[in-house]
Length: 234
Image (cartoon, rainbow, N blue to C red; front, side, top):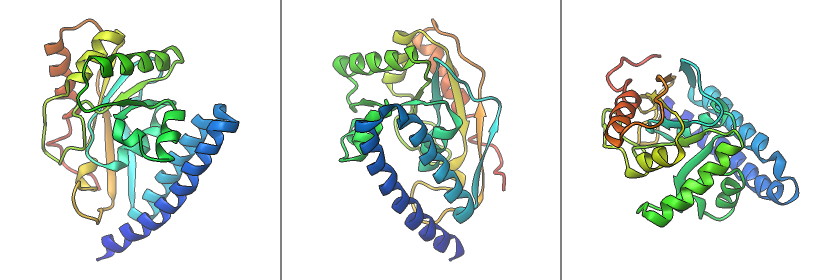
C-alpha cells in the first residue's frame, strides 16, 4: 500500500514536470539549440530527485562511467536508467526505437538532443542512417548509448543481443564499455508499485575495437548481465 501511494505521487510529480520540460525543449530547439544538452541533463536531475524523495530509489556507480567517443552498452530493465544516464553520462547520444522519436513534441525534443532513432527491422538503410548519426555524435566527443538487448528485459532474463549492436561496433571502430545494472529488482517491468533501495550501475572493462562479432557479443553479453545473480542492496 505504501509503495503504491509513493508510486502514485511519483507519477503525478514526474510526468507533470516532464510535460513542462518537453515543451520547453521544443522551444529551445528553435531559439537556443545550444542549451538543449544542459536542459536535458536538468530533466535527468529532476527525475533523480523525484525518484529519491518519493520512491526512495537512488543510484550508485561501481566503477567509473566513461566519457568521450565510446559505445556504452547497457542492460535495460526499467525506465529508471533511461533518465539516470542523462546525469551519469556526458551528453549521451541515445539509440532508441523510432516509435519513441515519432511521438509528438517528445520526439522533437529527443531529436534536438541528438538521439539516434532506429527501426525495429534494422535493415541496411536503417544501419546506414544510425551509423551516420552516431559518427556525428562521436565527432562531437559524445558517447553513444545503446541497450543492446533491444528493450526492457525482466529481471533474470538474458536474451541475445540485437544485430544492430554488432553492426554499430564494426562500423564505428571505437571501444565498447559495458554496464550492468539491477533496476528491475526495485522497478519491475509489470506492476505499478516500486520498492525503495539502491540501483547499482556496474561499469565493466572496456572492450577494444576490431574483435569478431562473436567475441564482442559474448564479452558484452556477459558483462551487462554481471549483476543478474547478485544480491539486492537496500
